[in-house]
Amino acid sequence: MKPLKCAVVGVGYLGKFHAQKYAALPECDLVAVVDSDPEKAQAVAAQHHTQALTDYRALLGRVDAVSVVVPTRLHFAVARDFLMAGAHVLVEKPITVTVEEADELIQIARQRDLRLMVGHLERFNAALLGLDLSRGKPLFIESHRLAPFNPRANDVSVVLDLMIHDIDIILDMADSEVERIDAKGVKVLTSDTDIANARITFKSGCVANVTASRVSLKVERKMRLFLPHCYVSVDFQNRVLARHYMGEKEMFPGIREILSEESTFENGDALLEEIRHFVACIRGGHEPLVSGQAGRRALATATAITHLLAA
Image (cartoon, rainbow, N blue to C red; front, side, top):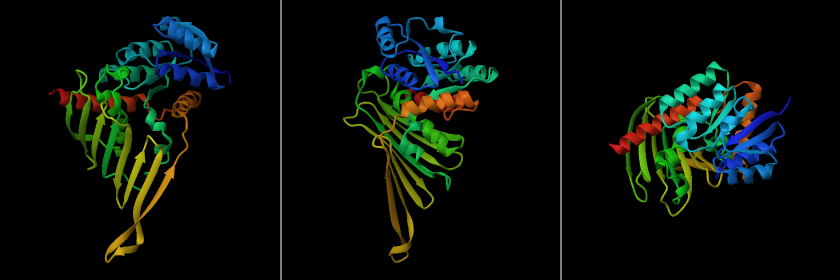
């Protein structure tokens, strides 16, 4: 097969890594990178021996696939233009600013039989990929995503910046409609919420307690799952998956023993795997792991939490 003609729109901190991954894949031809800052575009283009542009519209109709890594407020317009021009789109999270915008992108992609994927990178974390939930759904989920302050991402609240990663994963695990959401949050360094906690109750009975902070002194990305007769811990930061379950013997009269097993995964390249998956979905014509619909579902829940915090 001929390599896919690919491009990256927005080559700031994250976008430059998208360009690096496309350039490394033999099934892709990185034909251009785009950024409103010509110096950034030229610097990344020079690294990968490709064209630098400042206006993405010059690429419409010229590429097969594109990564959209611009500020969130621009996701909809840029992704829509490429979909309308017949290109497959990988858009960074959150998919769009509003659910209505997400619905329109999903509809365009469906009508044109194009792949629309959302960059929820944690879905490609090796520890999460090693998790097996085939024997039962979680009854209770607890997640903590803590990070020091980073001015690069302060155009959105901590919910859309950090918490949405765990929201996406939890919605996929629970596989049930949301029945109720309670949320609290506080502003610390910015005019938007910097620390937030949400309690999500699903119609299945599963409950998720989700905490996110971008003013922490440490980095922590952990999720704890309580299943029937089993407790699982996922450490995204260190790629450690631990499982604790009941054995056949008794540790006390009438109380079964608890056995543990732990797996540590190598430091893989989640972004490379994400883009490789995107390309494979284009080649195979199948729905991405994080489809436009999954991105929309995460956005809808994150938006509901944001509204509760603003009330």
